[in-house]
Length: 114
Image (cartoon, rainbow, N blue to C red; front, side, top):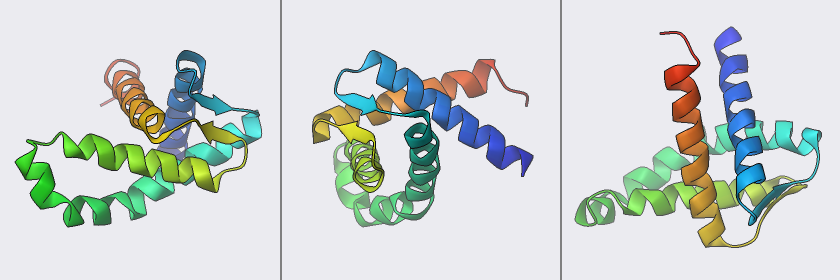
């Protein structure tokens, strides 16, 4: 349970930073931020693995760059499922997913325990 809460807080922090930096991503309330972090985690756990397997040939052909679009799609899907979490376009979703990944990695690398 502790690990889930830490993961949820890291995703929420990454979403907050993304909202702060990118003008195409906006989160209206703290409640929307909390729900968006949970929904993004669920979409990443349930939908992204299926999309990754289905798009594996094109991901290999593009040397992994297509995976950025898969992440962007899951980010965009999460924004459509949560009221108060807005993404202007698909390309903002790709950039937002990249930003959330970078912030999450940074927090995990420098702010967490092994």
